[in-house]
Length: 419
Image (cartoon, rainbow, N blue to C red):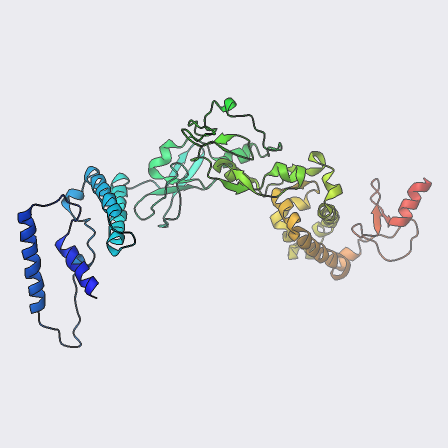
């Protein structure tokens, strides 16, 4: 309590502790004022019990932000430098140093407010195929993708691109030079399938591949950071050491270890992760010989394609919307060749195999047990004409590629040998 009283008196007596040293007369005058103030405080009568106690907020917390000479950026910068010097001179971890740090933060916020006033900005800005929307969130945990500084949502206006989620200050909009990544995804939806195709800094003229700032491996004038996806080098403003799974390493090595990529590559890979653009049979057909999960998934996808005609012609299946079980992976009901990076990630973790097995079981139950119309569309083996009703997606059947007839697998294989 004694320290709090002394601290309050100190703040009251030193409203601006960063002013230059005052003369001896002013010292004496201030000391006499402080003495009279203490005497007046001691002379105040005590409040009766039950009465509310009022305290002056200016006395308890005065950060020196209300002075008239703190109205211009020049004076604010000077006050910030003086505050830094005071912080260095004060004892570490002391209460006075903590107060000075709080004061420094408020001074910087006020300076930033003068630089970026909360003016009326349009809600929508279209620039280089970006479609920016003004954000209403006051969160301060965002970072500007252009200047690589924190976005102070309380005092700054900032925008987010609805296509690629590029975030930046309103003052940085006109400095953007990179088009929206979603436009590239729409016009050229394909991956770089060469593993880290490095060409060297000399091919980039020792400049960042995005903003063209000078870079070097020695870190002078700026550190060169390589993107494992494109193989190019970027500066620290365009490459934040974000981690992402590299498609080329997945399809060639079945390697899912995240590696460092640039901001532009990270946004592109994030937008492409669910797009089915990988035809594995053409890119790496040997992958099915070494990854058992892919073989199982391919068989399940082929069976689902054989079930699809049943659901299209079945009224009950259409009303139940069974095919919507695969609404997140529509390409599974269109072909069995195309894969997305998300499909391969889920196959690697085992989630895709489990979900496809459940969907396969649900579809087969409807066709073979629940729906009489679908049961009536079964087949009888054309070779033995005996046994249960066959369906083309059964594991013990084979389908003729010419006439689409269904046979018992062993009989069909024997028939093919005799022919």
